[in-house]
Amino acid sequence: MSPAAVLSREARMTLWRSLQTFTVTRIVIALVLLLYLGVRITDGGVRLDAANTPACLFYLVAALVFGALGAWWRRRFALQLGCQIALDLAVISLLYLEAGGMRSGLAILYLFPLAGAAILAPLTLALFASAVATLFLLLETTWQVFMQDNGRSPMQAGLYGAAFFAGVLVVNRLAARLIKQEELAAQRGVDLRVQQAINAIVIADVGDGILVVGDDSAVFTGNPAARRMLGLEGEVAAFRLGEAPGLEPLAQAFSAWLRAPSEDAAFVTVKPYQEDAGPLRGRRDQPVHLKLRFARVDTLDVALGRSVVFMQDVSAIENQAQQLKLASMGRLTASIAHEVRNPLSAIGHATALLAEDLHGPAEVRLLKIVGDNVTRVNRMVEDILQLSRKVQPNGEPVQLASFLAELKAEFCETHGLAADIVYLGDPGTSALRFDPLHLHEVLLNLLGNAVRYASREPGSIRIFPALDAAGRIELHVQDDGPGITPEVRAHLFEPFYTTSSKGTGLGLYLARELCLNNDAKLDYEYRFDPTATGPRRASGRFVISFSQPA
Image (tube, rainbow, N blue to C red; front, top):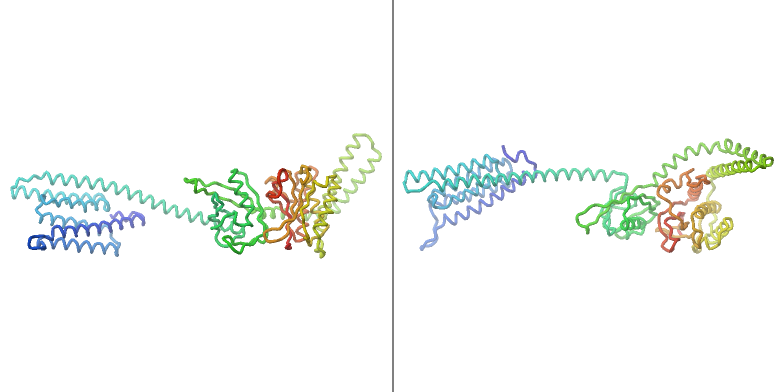
């Protein structure tokens, strides 16, 4: 049975290429034999040897025919190889006899077909060819000893035969090992291609975005989810994160992770941007909040550092969680005025009447607890009812300079703060179409959160306008307190979620809903203020993004 029949396609192609090399070597040997045995140089000139020239020419022509056959008709490998080895043995034996037998030295030519058989044929066929060549040498030497009585010994022929068998065994074992290793490599290559195809399907269909980034922030590749999250057009390649102004938060988070690797997730907000030229082309019309995880790729060469950035769109998860809570809150709002507010008023009135008759310390303390909780529940009711108070867009623009100045004065007076604690950035002549009552309530809510965590040093609370990559106005509110943890950030704008024992969990949710009602967006960004120094370099800030351009 042919060895090629049980091998892979790659291994069979290797055998056919080896057979072609074997054929080319035969052509070279045939030319050398033709020049060495078929051409005689005498005093009278160059003439052809009548005895050896036909055999050498036949050998050359047959080698050319076998070469063409192996190149154009790659079928019946064992048959072609067997015919070629038989031709080699026959022609070499014929030339061996014509040249005078053992004394001609042509017995060494048997090593060529035998080595080819050892490499390309099964061990049995290779040993059979060795046996044929050895028997021929022994029979020829024996004939010379008995028939011509010239004193020759078959010892030399026996040594040649032993060398043939030993060479065939060694070469065949080495060739078999090489073929087995190549077969294993071919199988591993097939497995690798299948695994790559599976990985391509998984990476293409996975919901999380995946970017492969070098240590110099060069992006090598990314899956479709990453392109969708970042708003990129075409393939994700041939640009650096730092070259894209819209992806600056992502570049900052990656650089920070390279300086101090950590398993903790990072949160960034990619704002609306538009890139029409350069290596990065893309568009984001809506902000997207991403959860980032980083992983280092182990490489042998440090200079080829690669990292994988996993991105998860947290905005979709947050919206889904809010929709679930809104469904239940809608049912609560429908009956809250009658089922909660009226009994709450009765409890408050009864508490006030009791306070007129009870004056003991224990009674006063208990009544105060009841009154505080009544106030808290009443505030929660008011917040819920405000969600349904939709107003028409205000046609009059709000001048930011005067509005923020009045808001600052009111806030500082209410909380007893010094004027220099709250810093106002220069809004210039910017004007916004936003209901002033709603904007007033949103900013008071954000400032109330800020004053709880700020150090109350000069400039520890900051309000300043800015422009995003698309030229739209933003209003930033931040303090110098600790940043919001990722765990809290995941539930920050959900209704009834609060980290304060005195809060209702509706303040930030109500602020975001009021912004949406006025065609604006409220979000929290994990970014530093490059203009601030010292303790005012906060780790995060609330950002109100307005839809109208500056």
